[in-house]
Length: 351
Ligand SMILES: Nc1ncnc2c1ncn2[C@@H]1O[C@H](COP(=O)(O)OP(=O)(O)OP(=O)(O)O)[C@@H](O)[C@H]1O
Ligand SMILES: [Mg+2]
Image (cartoon, rainbow, N blue to C red; front, side):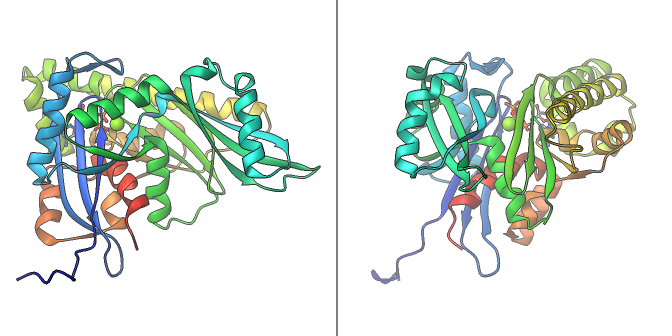
């Protein structure tokens, strides 16, 4: 029997629509930490999203529904994110003023700060430092392409979801990092997805520099398929089984080395830029998330190449996870894949 006045506290459903994997989690408030109630991951055909563009909407819808089905979650209100690829993040110094006046000014002057037509973007901002000296304040401006947000909303609605919040994936990972309670004044988040690696350099809790570059797990996956003469799905499943399973075959080593090189160059370029503008001298600890977290010894190889400490992110450490669920996550190597979804959910869940 359920008494009518004992209402269950609402749970939070977060979805991360990647270009190859769709991840969904359901979280609830917990005693010590929020709880992971369910999760589901579905694979998308490589034809569904190509170069960040939706090529086959039906495949994508199918994928979203299948992730919910696997998780055993009913579609409903969701928190989700667009990729940092479609967003511009900038820090600005402006005269000190009230937030509402600042908003008007930023909107009217946005064209000076972003390379898109102002009519085509949704803007938001946050005051980072109300007193940055000499009567100035520092604000963080975030501009997302209207079309991308609209398309994303449309997609979720078609999948019978009610979008509640749309965040940015890079910020979701930063939020996760904060929830993990790692107390560091400087760190760099590196999310290695299917086709894109995104980095977010965070200093004193503020994203100082975000950037994406085309490097990801796919090139490695394709080599694995070729070297082992196995189909796409099998190669994907193999990645979930961990380094030993693949290393035994000695497959894909060259393409892994190439990926490490691409990521290292991307990071070094960003650092060189920040050094030249006098902003930063180093990247702090590097935290690896996304599918890349499962590539055999990617972490160690990055460490060796960059000579910087690299750590793997385990988003489940920010949560209470039941034994059965924990075993499932371990078995299919999905912890690293859930970073964005869990980071999104954590922002909304009541503590
Ligand atoms: N356990 C796993 N199961 C399936 N794929 C995995 C696994 N571990 C790593 N991978 C690799 O990670 C990729 C997916 O990573 P991730 O979910 O971070 O990317 P995405 O969000 O789909 O892509 P993007 O962010 O670039 O749009 C897969 O394409 C595969 O190459
Ligand atoms: Mg992703």
